[in-house]
Image (tube, rainbow, N blue to C red; front, side, top):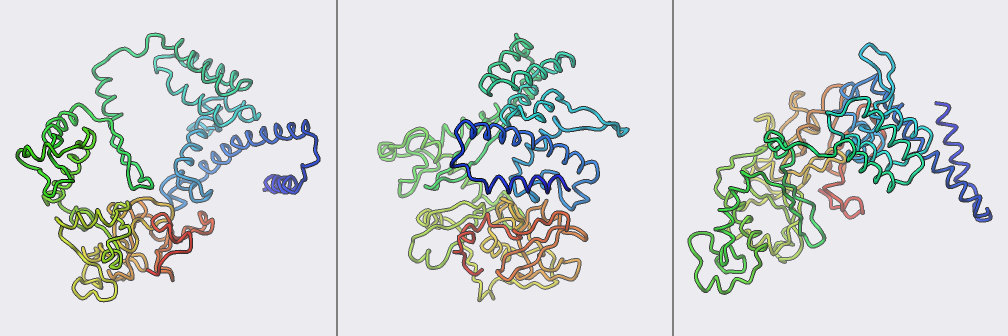
Length: 452
């Protein structure tokens, strides 16, 4: 488009401009002008995205969702893409079922944004406040509230807008929601969660949870038994997991309550895995899969990697190996575990899955963080329906949603010269590299990757 080209020319001109000799007062005016232009651009993006949606669909572009379209084309996170889409639905142009143009859901906010009066923080405060207004408030009052918030945001900083928004909610709902048993049940269903956070530099992870009354009822007796002093103590030569600990074990236990509950949950998880009652998942028994090198194992130093993408210090791996069944993946001599099945079967064997865990570590789709535990084996070079063989050189890991993207007229995959699975998007989504997923191989980004 001609306007986009003109904008790029102006930005190039400003990028080459010298500001060293410009008076401070004029520089501050430049800052204000640039900020206003920067704030107006999201309104244009909302209109562009609305036009894209009116002409196409994610399926026609060979992708699952509009968030994925933005993530791929703009190289932004899925979280940022979802934020932009949500704001676009509230502040962008709309059309009725009959195709007639409609004003945005939040017209006053959309107009202020188009004038460059609102920052991204202003918009977030307004949209979150409007979402909190009780459904019983009538449409006319809601519209006035949105206009009031937009008016405040146009002339005030976000801190003042936040205070005004808080007062507005108090005025619209002074007594708060009425207590209701059904609402309490809905709230429990909505807010229950358990989130295993990423590892820090020491390998530790945050585990955040909000549990239902039922879950708590199960936890209380389990922790009461296994988190008692002297139970499940990893510092003991033989930790007590059944029966009653001896007086010596109790006296030697110096752990805090939090540490004892940590060790109790670890024991519960290990016992569940060792029971064999969890069956199979994606072609493998539900178990801990860890990959490392022979050198690191012999030296008892270094860090191994689990099928979930986490890092495991070698000392922990050796301790875990004391009560585990071992599988060894050998990449050049693999007669014991068949890795070349040809057309004998469509799905990968457990032995092949082990090798894929070690090689790919997770979904090979660019930017996908799904670890190997949650992935399927994918015929990456030649699809099985097209005569592809279930051999390791033809296989790669892919999560279910991305695996289903590979089809005629959609995405294509191949094994690149580096041994990594490469994903080729449909032409309309092709914004150039990356073709491979570096999330599970960060060493490749620094040029320190090893030949697979």
